[in-house]
Amino acid sequence: MQGLRPHSPRRVAFTLAEVLITLGIIGVVAALTLPALLANQRKIEFASRIKKFNSTMSQAILMAQKDYGDPTSWGSPGDYILKDENGAPVLDDDGDYQYDEVTGSRNAYNMVMKYIAPYINYLKIEELNNEEGRTGIYFADGSIAWVKTGACLDFNFDVNGNKRPNTNGIDRYIFLLCTVNGITYFGNSNRYWGTSMTVADGRNNRQAALEKCKTANGTCARLLELDEWEYKKDYPYKI
Figure 1 (cartoon, rainbow, N blue to C red):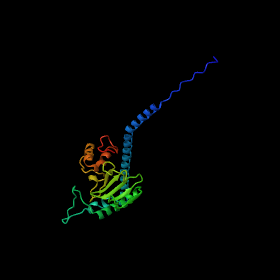
Figure 2: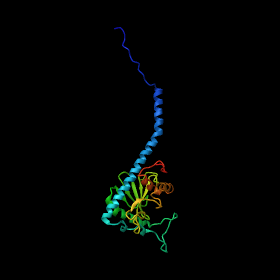
Figure 3: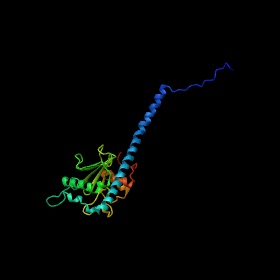
Figure 4: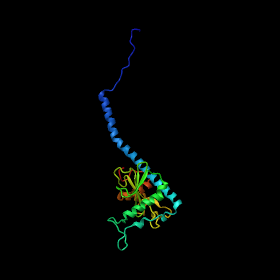
């Protein structure tokens, strides 16, 4: 018994070929799943920023109302519509009103500085940005709100700032501050701020909002709002 050697367990190891095959499989799985994971994370981040911007602006306008009264007394973007020699509004090829680029842009900047800026946190506000031709509100998370005079005061919120694609419905979403000649947000007597929607009829209908988002991507924020600020599976654009 003393002369017997103790039993040595057999050591098991992977060969180089087995290791390479395993790493290859892991790489393929990662390549297949990583884009989906990144896209999902991007959707969550974008939706969170849009929701936060909407909430921030809603609260700012409510606080400004306490200091300055009803927003219909703040000034009307409609005062800056270009008119022809007969006094009729000048329209572009799409049938939209044309606004004086100088006085209209100055009006947008003045309204932002007086009624919005004191009630929000921002990095800087830039008037008549050369690229966009409108007032830019820059936020700490990298997002930018481009503001211009339109039928209402238009806020084009870019969730990732100047990064591409700079396209409505993907990384840009339009909101409105409506104080036009005493007209409130889509006829709501107690509301002035909200998502853009070209057709008021059916704006509370999710299917109608989805179809409108497909054909007029400037209205997609309304679809997200109805979906509680989430990108559903049938959202028509790749984020």
